[in-house]
Image (cartoon, rainbow, N blue to C red):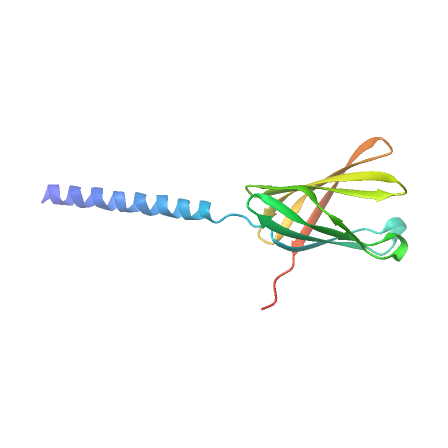
Length: 145
């Protein structure tokens, strides 16, 4: 009887261990996917209207592709720019955006961490020879069914 209870306890322990391993494997299989339309606002210049940016991302393997749309200067037409060097590593996404104004190129490097439908990170750029960083936080639009 004692041996039967001991064997039953061992069997129960093995079953619990197997369920834990299976749950962990399933959680690892569920990868973060940045695919979707993300939006965020930045304050306008001199207290002006906030400027809304839209980022459309698509995951292709571990490569991230997409477009960033930002409002034009002084209410002008929105500018769309293809993102470059898009990557996904775990729940972290990174990409570069190169824009041109007046014959000069401006490069912004975006990094962020995805948590559900929130993408929060930093944008690094250079202005007047000085490196600068800004926080950014985007929300993913929910798909209409």
